[in-house]
Each structure stands twice: as structure tokens, then as C-alpha cells.
Image 1 (cartoon, one colour):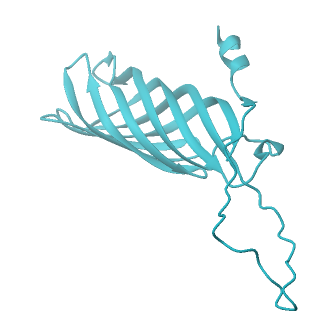
Image 2 (tube, rainbow, N blue to C red; image 1 turned 135 degrees about the horizontal axis):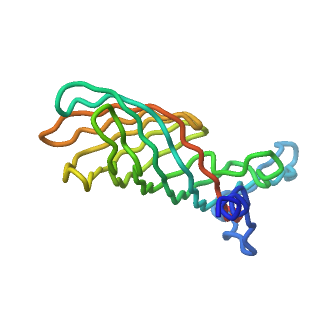
Length: 191
């Protein structure tokens, strides 16, 4: 099963259509000033638009303040849908194919949350995310089915590292840090 998940990741597909050209017919052509001859205007790279689906797992540790402070760990899964763009075409000539700027939606589930008291199903969450290059911020809402707790959640990340803070209403905050590894499937077309 794990091999099938890996086989689908890190792939991209160039879609067969392009966006309409960006032309401003009201702007006159550039002139050299020496008799009115037109300058040759070099075409600009239109860049690319991308939609990416990512899936993967995270693990980390943190501190909970629900009934006194105590530490523990988490492990879970996250799915994301990204919509973004890159400033140049054929970004796939580089090693990593992914939008340099994107807005995303994350859905995640903490499969195991463990501390010195017990191991339980952790929070299910939904987040809206803003990303630029390899860093970003996400915010949303978390719900923990085993305890019926609910509250806001904020995640800061850089590449595969994250720091996440939850505040469960009436219970207290949680702060976690860890690593998330996600595999992308990307669809690309010209702007």
C-alpha cells in the first residue's frame, strides 16, 4: 500500500490548454525616438499556473495545558489542495515542481496523540493556508472526537518543519512542533 502511495507522488502533468494571452491593445508600441521606428519587444515569460494535491504524514511533540502542563507526541495524516503560480514557465526543469506562491486548504487528522496519561485519537482539523516559497501560515478549526473539545488552530511552517498551536475552548492550549512529509501531484498550464 505504501509503495502505491509513493508511486503516485512527486508527479506533474502539463495540461494541453493555455490561458488567453495578456495583451493591452490601448498601449502604443515602444519607439526609439529616432524617426519613429519601433523597438523590437522581447516576449516575456508568462509563467505558469498550478493546482496541486498533496498527501502525507506528520509527527511531532509538544506541551498540553488541559489539566496541568504535560508533554507528549502526535502522529497523523494531512491532505491539501493548493492553487498557485510560478513566475516562469517550465519550472519543471528544476528538481521541485510546485507553485512558488499558493493558497491552500488543508484537512488533517491526528491519528495518535499520546502522553504519560494515555494514547487517544487526536484532533481532526481544517485550515486555510497561505504559502510563499517554502514558508507559510495556516489557520483553522480543530475538533477532538474523543474528548468533544473544539477550538482554533494556527500552524507556522518552513519546508517540512512546523509549529502548531491549538486552543481548545474551556480546556487550554497545546503547542506542538515536528515534521511533515507530503508528496505532490501537480497539474500545470501557462498563464
